[in-house]
Picture 1 (cartoon, rainbow, N blue to C red):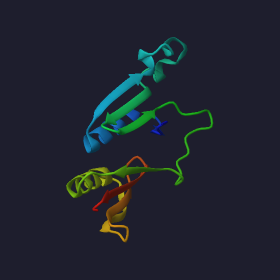
Picture 2 (tube, rainbow, N blue to C red; picture 1 turned 180 degrees about the horizontal axis):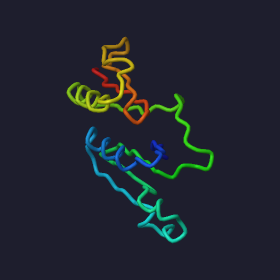
Picture 3 (cartoon, rainbow, N blue to C red; picture 1 turned 45 degrees about the vertical axis):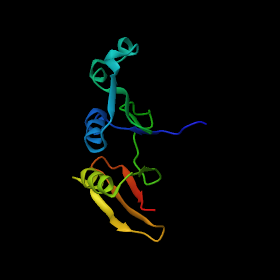
Amino acid sequence: MAQIHSYLTFNGNCREAMTFYQECLGGNLFLQTVGDSPLADGMPERMKECILHASLSKEGMVLQGSDMVPPTGLVKGNTVSLSLECSSEEEIKKVFKKLSKEGRSDHPLQDTFWGALFGDLTDKYGNHWLLNYNKK
């Protein structure tokens, strides 16, 4: 079956953001700059340190990103959230605390009617996260 991976676009701080997410979530981080790609010769010098493609993977999780902003510009909205299904109460508390640092806790972790520990936050890069741990 096909899989869907989240792909985030940043405005020059993809390396910083993806490194932050690796610190919060763990996993293996791959970063490819424009300068290390076949596109390097056709790009302005200022673009060569920009991230062409980043991928953070851990078990079944894949989070991707790039600094390659479309010609229309980068517009952040509230139409996309990153949903993270945690495997323990300890994990959800640790990840929630790390991801919300310098961001904001929109709804603190709390027990829900569906039997989970759930909360949501907006991280310091403006990305919205939904964290869930099913207690059943």
